[in-house]
Image 1 (cartoon, helix red, strand yellow):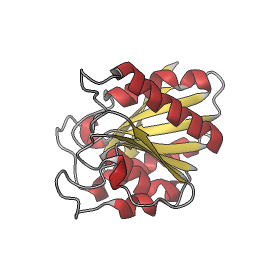
Image 2 (image 1 turned 135 degrees about the vertical axis):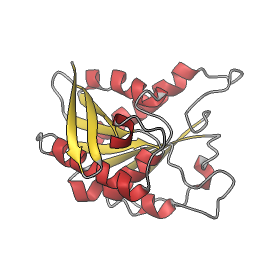
Image 3 (image 1 turned 180 degrees about the vertical axis):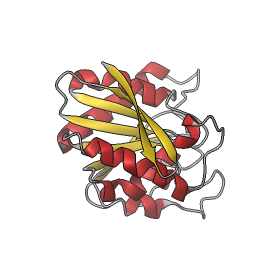
Image 4 (image 1 turned 90 degrees about the vertical axis):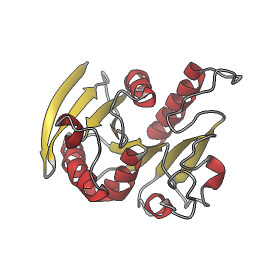
Length: 212
């Protein structure tokens, strides 16, 4: 069952599209990146794959996307547009895992502990701007304050799996054999796009169920 609702935030109205499980054990709230929306291939795949496993998936559109703007605002404004959504979902009474892809992963890492979430899923965490490894954002990830799962493509220009520092206890890194920042797989790769998306869904689903 899929439902949609708007949540008021200090940055405008955010929109939740909830793909509900029949007998949910947890809710996974996922935000989108700075240049795209909830139609990203990994978010769509998770929303299809996890409800049958007992995990409801809430795909969250930031207020700037709901308002029809093309570019995301500054990180502080993204946080303002996310916190009330997470707090609203926590109030539903199920364990909440927050996460997202790229900029959405950063938001979840920065705000998760304060909203009452029990864990963070970071998809394609942008460890640094492309070609600028000295501009590391690792601190946001390392100091999330919650168990955190990172899923990273092997050819992500924002930071491949081998670039990540040693993670603290409770953090895990799943390195995909192929995939860029959007988890797109080259045509000549020995594994297909569906297989890599399946790996993402299995890793996230298994981790969330272990956590809750």
